[in-house]
Length: 315
Image (cartoon, helix red, strand yellow):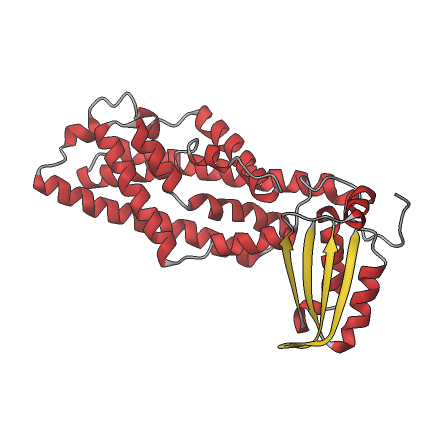
């Protein structure tokens, strides 16, 4: 169940109420006349089955409500309502499968924002990854993967392609590019300092590393794992039953590859730079394609349930 708080200009309120009153997914509808101060107008409160939310929001956008008013949607964690239960039963589909696109798109923009926090996590994760490579420690590699914030921006690429939000595509691509460049440069500087102090030697970078050799040795499995992990991650992001993101973070070697690129640059080891760069590109490409395909398939399968409904059906 979702709760919608709608701020509507007075001249659009009757249209809003008409849309809501005619939709069988709506279980409760309230209006506070003149309660809104900015923007000035009325406040409409609606409880709606999650699987019916997209059709309602699309109709509100069609009348231009988002341009002069606002639509706030939030999940209802617990509720007791016979009308709510009836609304869920008569609305096609499952709430766990329903994608509330306005929520997914908003989160994609937030996750793609290039800010100090994002860059800090990128740098810290890449530093840990480089230490993991020097020590040949899989535990530290996993820690670096979990700490890295890049998956949100990669998933945003898929959202942008499916929803045709090209400004989001440009934003997410810019964030990924700048994030990895800054993280690699900062880690390269740290590696050069470590080299100057004698803490890191070229043997640490080029010597046998049985626990972390996969980082600079990409193969077909690198792409396959990236595709599967990203598909699971995107499903976790769009589903009401999230829980697969940790699996994505510890399956895809983007951050460790960036850390190895930095070490290769610090010591001038070409094959380490090339192998890790290829690993990084393969993983990002696989994740982006998987995110796009997962969302596109989900949208196509759900399309028949998202048509605007009129009238009610018996429960």
